[in-house]
Image (cartoon, rainbow, N blue to C red; front, side, top):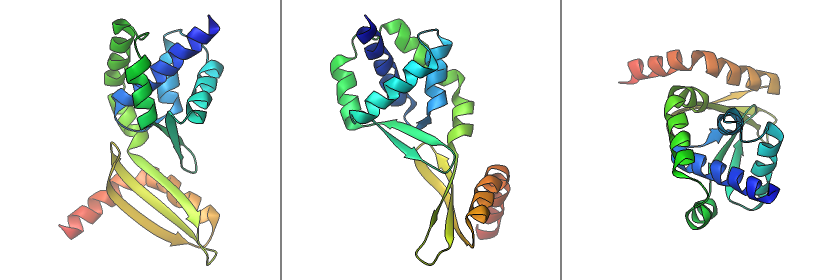
Length: 171
């Protein structure tokens, strides 16, 4: 029975990622599963790990958040083996995504990360996203990792002002 349960959790994860139509952080998916009382956080983590290992989902990590999306393999698996997801569960997931739409937008629209370059500097890349599409991006080279982190943190606070300033002055 435990095998059937973990299979159900995996199908819920795949269905949620497919219906969201964009990358989601783990808490957005696990909150639904744990909030409905299906299982606990650790079992959800295990299901995510198995889906990653099987290539059914992929992760994209920034300096402070990891986002997940369904792969083509995951979509095929869901279409072939998704029957155990009842219409009620599918409806609950769709309702959850509608209810959390603003929260999802807030969690996924501002993405910032940094990397080091061959000259020993850091490049902070700040994106304003709409779904999986970048609608604004800026890159800033800074001298230290601490400065790169500061840029990423400030992006969370100041992105709207920066975006508005650029639009106002370029259009």
